[in-house]
Amino acid sequence: MKSKKSIIGDAVNTLQLEAQSILGLIEHINDDFIRIIDHILLCKGRVIVTGIGKSAIIAQKIVATFNSTGTPSIFMHAADAVHGDLGMIQKDDIVICISKSGNTPEIKVLAPLLKQSGNLMIGMVGQLNSELAQQADLILNTTVAKEACPHNLAPTTSTTAQLAMGDALAICLLNARNFNEEDFGRYHPGGALGKRLYLKAGDIALKNQKPSIAPSASVKDVIIEISQNRLGAVVVVEADMILGIITDGDIRRMLEKHTNLADIRASDLMNPHPKTIEKELLAINALELIKENNITQLLVTDAGAYFGMIHLHDLLQEGII
Image (tube, rainbow, N blue to C red):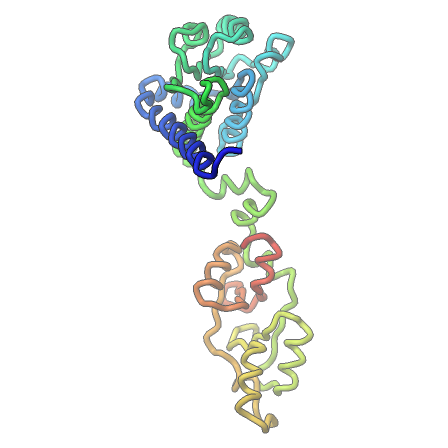
């Protein structure tokens, strides 16, 4: 077994080498990179990304990032391409071929075929004198000094460089398209991430009861309304307009101070300045208000009128937190 110090040293060395490989790409952001962005922005088809081995895995990730940020993209495995998958390439598509060496047997076979198809071919490659680099119309240079692997064999820094270059492309395209949070939410409707981008305060409030009471209501009526609706609070309303809120904490504090409850009314107990949010605002905005004000309940309004209530637990349940 290696010592703790040795293991930490290996990990730190790996991260340093990979960080250096990414920083080394900066000098390769050149005119070819600009032309590639321009071509993809003008592309009427899709971006086909292909590779073999570890580069194929990176290609799949780049495709996923492109698709989720507004650039239609398809993965094509380089080995399968010469066995029928070349048929997926349409005349308006752009092809990005990824390879560290640019000289693997599959790439040597595929590159001339891609060139003959007439599609723009972009080579993301680590050797500029390779077959792929010579066949490509434009080049994304992902050359690295060495792999993090101590034998300089296992793809490590090279695949990190490919991944980072793909991200650089995706972000440049995203910004050029003015791709915003609403667009992102449309492509990511599932899971907690999607909910943070599209779920509205009103959507959550509709799932809850709508506890309300008149300002003249007795303490008993207030307690019953809070208990029945299980949100820990009730809203004091008059003609659908919010006058205040009474929480179960307000009830406890009142009982500590008063023994005669007969003359106490809802209007005496309420906080006349409750925090509110309009129903069309996002649930993530509701969470921000709850955190900022250190509260548990937040009232939802519709053009100022009482619409419903959100509890902190609702946001937890929806995965917003």
